[in-house]
Image 1 (tube, rainbow over the protein chains, first blue to last red):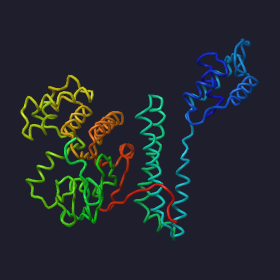
Image 2 (image 1 turned 45 degrees about the horizontal axis):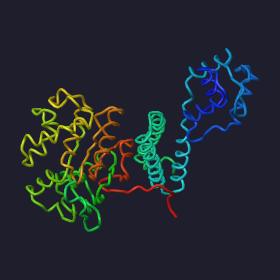
Image 3 (image 1 turned 90 degrees about the horizontal axis):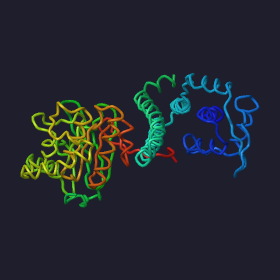
Image 4 (image 1 turned 90 degrees about the vertical axis):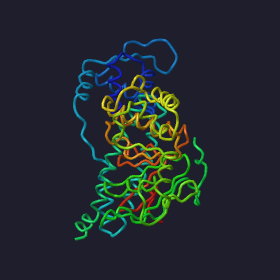
Length: 174
Length: 238
């Protein structure tokens, strides 16, 4: 999750104070990791330095900063470019699991048991996300769905790998 | 809830399979499969195609008889019962939901839901009166008179779910209940199944190969080559 780009996106919606940006960021994107106020203001300062946002006056009121931030044309352009470009697909977890399986087989260790333990851990996390969906709102559901589908993809790979352990063992033990 | 849900078997479980074996011709389907489920528990039975998970479910439900091993329900051994007694057990104490609904095409949706009550000898008017509230509960209002050919896959599966649960069975056996549905419809069916079974205190034995469906269960086991493994999260080995 890119904090600067996300804040730019929130600012493209409407000019906002730092406090409002933090509130909306935490609501939609930072549920498990709320954005510290310090990071909000340091990010906004960098965006201002780089010409992506400008301040539109200081308003009286409570809170550490009553500056109102407005996105610039350069900011809109950067955000829209990021939005339109597909993210790199990252098979991050597979690389770890793949390394474990291959090393376990090379060393004659119980690769199937490691995979079953991983499978159980994945299912336990999927159960948590499913419970979150059942008691949460639509935003929670969409976030949980994203996690569930990714975990399911890992599980499909785990199942297939379990089915291929014998052949894989012959391959790596040669 | 019907009467026997609180009665435990010898091991404290409501329903239990012990070392089941069954072959189809020369092909072994179950090779010492064991599992147990508590009253009110939702248990997912997973495994690859051909692993024996559906055969295990049919043995637990008294549809198939194992060639070796034992099946216990409510403190009573049921695999040695005759077909008439097992049929009565299935009708009175168990509910079923299969992959493709399997509604009776000649009957309307409300008659399909009422079918277990009608087969149990209830008067038609009473059975239909008990079936109708399920349509509102499962989001099927206005579809009571439709026949199965006039329902979408998701609607038919919800009708099948109501039929499986209308007698508040001690055990609901669900074999790939979302297998023919898209993701969103399958999720709705699972949400309804989970909530209704929980409200009624029914035990659910859920056979599925889909992890997202299994995630609705409190616990899962995996069937491989006709045997059952329990999965526990955590570090492997000492």
